[in-house]
Amino acid sequence: MRLVLQLVARLFVIVILCLGAATVWATVDAYRSVDRASAASAERVSVALEALYWREILLRSSRMREQLLPTAEWRTIQTMGLISPGICIRVEPAGAFEQPLCGQSKGIGQTPPRWFAATVETVLGTHAPAVRPISTRADTAGSVSAMPDPHAAIALAWQHVLDNIHLALLMAVAIALLASLAIAHTLAPARQIVTALQRMARGEYRTALPRFRSMELAMIGQAVGDLGDRLALATEERAALTRRLLEIRSDERRALARELHDEFGQNLTAILAFANTIEAASAQENGKNEVAKDARMISQATHRIMACLRDTLKRLRHPPAEELGLEACLVDLVDVWRSRNATQPMIQLDLKGDLADVRGAVAAAAYRVAQECLTNSLRHSSAREIVLRIERTSGAENALLVHVEDDGGGNAAKVAASPGFGLTGIRERITALGGSLSIADANRGVRVAATIPLAA
Image (cartoon, rainbow, N blue to C red):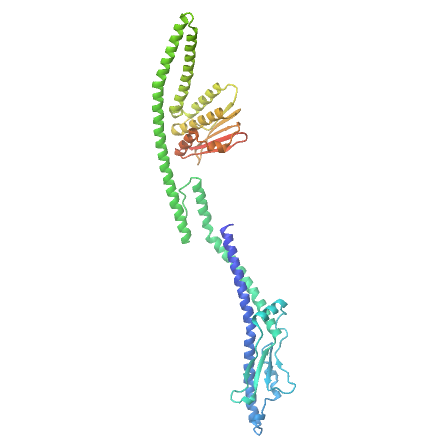
């Protein structure tokens, strides 16, 4: 899952949790606001009745204070205006058959669901009445008791939740969208960092990254740049070391070729001369045909060893492609293999592009790839057709592409994991030149593809 989506999902969960917490807080606050409304109503009514009480004392001074009570005149429209909606007021001591005076409760809010009413009553409990004395100086004046209507209180809480939930939802959606855009904009440089790492995986180690505003991303970009520089330096050092090793190995091959030619060649020539002398001398003597036959067999074996030695010397010496050019050497290589295998397999040579000026190490590496792949296909597979394609690409790539494909079956994975020196040698040679070698399954066999930069 993408990092942006993960952060947005987590942000959405946080917004939902905050919205839930806000809803719970709004419910509790609305439910408890009824208690505050009850206390305020009781306070306002008690103040009004206290004024009425002392007015009655002044107007009816002949009566005993103990008999003075607020008259029925307190149940007026002015008193109703002092009572909050959903609150009922009772005056103690109450008169006969006197009912509480309640504020307007109709239309105070929508009827809440049963689960909401049950949950609120269970969790928050019931409301306690708010009691205020009419006069603090006269206990006989009585008291005012304000009691909220429980249904009106729950309806008020539900309406408060409905009024706030729409705004909260709108704010949650806005916060989620704006935060998502901010997160996406902040993490946009991560795509550039991933692209740079992918290019580094393909061998383009020195990949420049822009300077990021975020300190963390800037540190990551700097680390990626430093890693690319170190990888490029290590690759250059490894390539230089590989080239040096190849030079040393080429010197050893030339020295070995000289030793084989000087020592084995002269000894084989001497053996062949001795065998011919023995054969000629035996042929002149009667009854010595067996010796002549043995001498002839020695001569034939010597000829085979000398032919094998010549092939070995050709492989040990530098390929002529370094001096003579790649195209001519490839044509000669294919002609030699065709002459040795007159029937099958059929070797198809396909040359594309201008190869006239391809010489030196690049030509030698391409020749070695073609030589090794042809040798493996002819010796280790039952191929009927081998395609050798050499293509020179121009433009930004500017490389030499070598493709060898056969139809002799085989397993590319096994070929790639082979511990033989042939593929290992050409892989080292191509790597030293900054190229690449791949071995994959073809339609009916194995395909070897090499890319050698001409800038090498």
